[in-house]
Amino acid sequence: MKRIWVACVLVAFVGLGSPFTAEAGNDSTVAHWRFSKSEVKSGSLDGGKLILKDRSGKGNELVLVNDGTDGLLNWSKDDIARKFIVGSLDFHNRKSLKGGQYFQTGKDAPLNGEAFLKGYTIEAVIKLPDPFTRDEYSGMGILGRKGSELTITHFKQVQWTGTPANGKKSRVFGSFALPGKKDWYHIAVVNDGKKTRVFINGAEDFRQNASTVTGLLAPNKGVWTVGKGSGKGSLFAGSIQEIRISDQALPKGKWLIPEPRKNNLRSGMSSKGHLLGNKENYNFLFVPDPQKTVRYMPALFHQQVKWISTMQEKLNIAMTAFLGDMVDQSDSARQWEHSSLSLSVLDRRRVPYITLAGNHDYGLGNPYLYYYGPKRYTDKPYYKGTSPSKFSSYSITEAGSYEYLFLSVDMGHLKKDLPWAKKVLKEHPGIPTILLSHEILTSDGTFPVDTNRGNRLWEGLVDGNDQVFMTVNGHHQGTVHRIKENRFGHPVIQVLVDYQSSYNGGNGWMRLAEFDEKHDKIRFKTYSPWADSISEKERSYFDAPYLTGDEHQFTVPFRFKERFDF
Image (cartoon, rainbow, N blue to C red):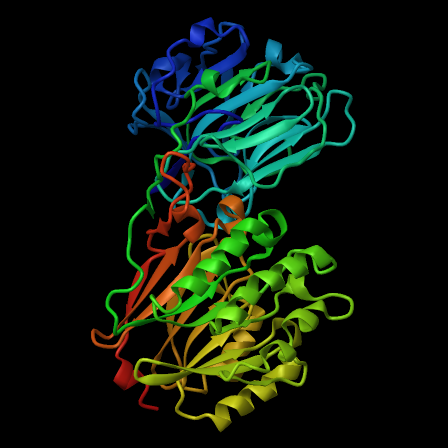
């Protein structure tokens, strides 16, 4: 089974920078485990009763637990390119199995009663399963003790739940979604006695929880589990190489991997690329849900829009479509004003663009219609009409050898606007059409999945109208695509693109579709002008201008003359 590597830290890094060699001299270490054959104190995987050493020497050995299903662990030959560390332990737990295997500390381990009143740093080096499917792996625990646990969420976000030593309400601290495949990560959760911070490869999450957590609840007989959280969540799947727990907030220089190198881009990322193959080609640009950048990083969103305005002619961008959720909170006038003022740059430069509403845009008094309703487009010749609800619209633009119709159908008024959308297509036969709606496809973490709204749009609008050759949506965190045949036996390209839970709320990544009529291809690319503006020395591990994995960059063969011969 293929797997994704992740260095998980409630602080630990993987494979970037110099190896940490002074572990024995770190007096703050209260428990330290390496998951390799050389660290076995007694027993074996095959023979049972496996016990792993505690490298801190403080008596916190780990004991293997078989809970319903055994035979799910094996020693890996993988090496994370760190000296003195070879191998790891592969976990093959999954939700569809009854039970599984994990480790726990002994009932008398000193770690069980540790309250961490002065703070803590917890480190782990792990790898996630590939493919990561949400139905099998979401919610799985990496480690924990009753009241506190480190887990992986539905969107591959690291989530640390900490319950204060006084036992009062627990607090949740999360990270952005873990991207990529076969990558090493340094994920850190560090508590200084009050504030808790989450890092991945040295990069801090863009949303910070200001809640105070002093110490951790240390319940009576509260053993620590590894490969399992403290609650009823699923068991861990993937690989674990190393976990270390310290009783104070360690600075980066004392982490297992000190000061993770910032400018080492992960696999699936690149600092170089091109966005237009030749001057005869043209682009359509899709901007996925900007809600988090508008709320948390408005300067990023403004720069993103400014780049569109300056590069529209150079890159032959015939239309830019914003895929919904123009704000994160519909009752925030500040967010609406920033969103609208940023797009006014396109108005002034007469750059063609369209918007559609997302679920975050509906609110009292219909703020979306106030800022992005039909009145905004009265002076735009490409904007041709709006639906009875005023939320859906259609536009027509020329690009290359064709006219293209962009049909935006609002997710919240689908029943009301669907007859109108059918009428638009009937009145414009023969015009190649791209259907936009905030929700069409979703993802199970790896593969495309139909939504109820997507099925209604397919059955009621796409399947029977051959001119619709592409659908694009956001709404669901993830990036997947597929080619689906309509009832005429012709291909319809379907694309989901949404980075809102990723680093910096999307980090300015946008999806370009370059139409190459000469070579009968459509090339999809993902680019961030924000990341491109950061010097290589200042870039974090995740600041890549170009995303190059198969889910972010791909080419679709497309016979234009045949497909558009309706």
